[in-house]
Image (cartoon, rainbow, N blue to C red; front, side, top):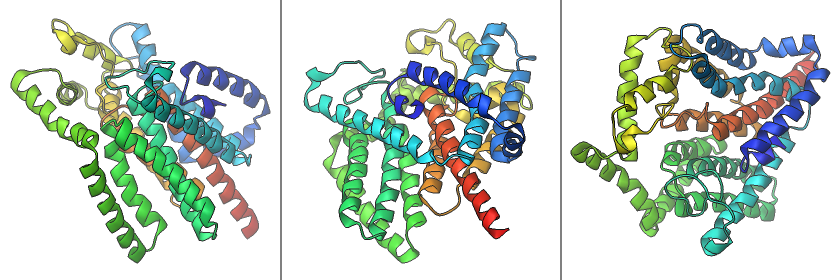
Length: 393
């Protein structure tokens, strides 16, 4: 239910999280849970959250600001519980199916309000909300792209089982998700992970010869999309326009703001490079920097729109080492054949790449996509390893 609610509601996710914890915790077998916790994929998120708690001790400012900085990282504590549950449960696929069905409903609603705008019942957040029924374009793209890559993998495996009709239907649904991203509501952040993940997908699923042929076909398709979509061209070309306006007039464009946030972040990191300024300090530093400024430059933000910089400001090099260790061991967990391994790898890789331009591990939607995706997929991989070890014994 958390996975089903995630594309639509933050409140519902929180409610289902509480209900799940109340149900799960009494059933935990301590020795089995400790065995799960000894694995790096489960232990490192706990160590990271521990660092954020300790980081409250040297943070400047109020305790409320420190707790505000702790909250985004706290969701990582759920990962060991999910890994434990799905190590002993065969219901990982139910999480994936719930998320896919929910996103598919959102997909059809998105297309519907593009065709019939007056049927829109809600108002999304952001600058361009055409075709975005809830949340914002970045969140919707993240969800739709994950579904598209998972469905593409399923289509390939279904085709190889000689179920051609089913494979075509699945591939068409995957294409519908991607078309919505490219032609209806495109967050430019999405291109940062869609292009690399497409290349990885091809070489993950095909041998070298077939991969080269597929890449040639995809390149031709990308050229056709670029030619046929003024919307796509405009979104991409506007990056250069925004940068030029920022340099020449100091207008707070999206591109210009990110560059400024990153520059300020590097200066703060240099002041406390090893352990950072403490938990919650990023929000305080950005708010202090906005004092006396006008327009969008005076907006009070809490993060620099880059996960590494966000972590480095608050917990320095130590925090960055833990962050990259989490990503490394989670990626390593999914370097295996099979649909579940591909889904898990896609979740991690998408989060790493999108976090170049956002703080997606700490954001609500993308962060919970990561926790639920890695938890359900990783538990499945643990379960498969245990079964293999049992058969070998």
